[in-house]
Amino acid sequence: MKLIYVAHVFGGSVVKAHRAEYWTAALNERIEGGLFFCPWLPMVRHWVDSGESRERGMRLDLEFVLRSDALLALSPLVGGVLQEWEVATNKILCDTSTVSAEPARDWLGFAVIQSWVDSLSKGE
Image 1 (cartoon, rainbow, N blue to C red):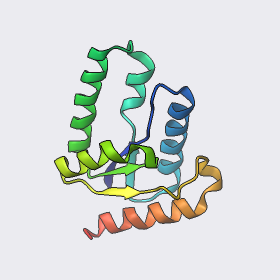
Image 2: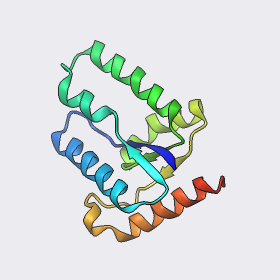
Image 3: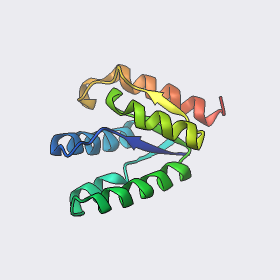
């Protein structure tokens, strides 16, 4: 079982937070061999938005990335930050730019992600 950090652009959008939560639940329901988690969701929901809380949140996020087996990007908009994390942590980044915003409709996206998780399990 691989521990997979789910990254999604947030930018203060409640809709984007809901989308990330929905995707995380759908991935855990449909994909075998991985446990998908999105630790930043409670932080953006419950913390006061300030420079200090964002800085602390980013430090915690990086710690979660370091402890993960892989990182799954659910938005092409987060590529810049994730690319830095991938280089810094030597983690695997799955480009899911073909994944739609609604998991219930995206069977191709799930097939791509399942194949990626299978390759992680095989050490490819």
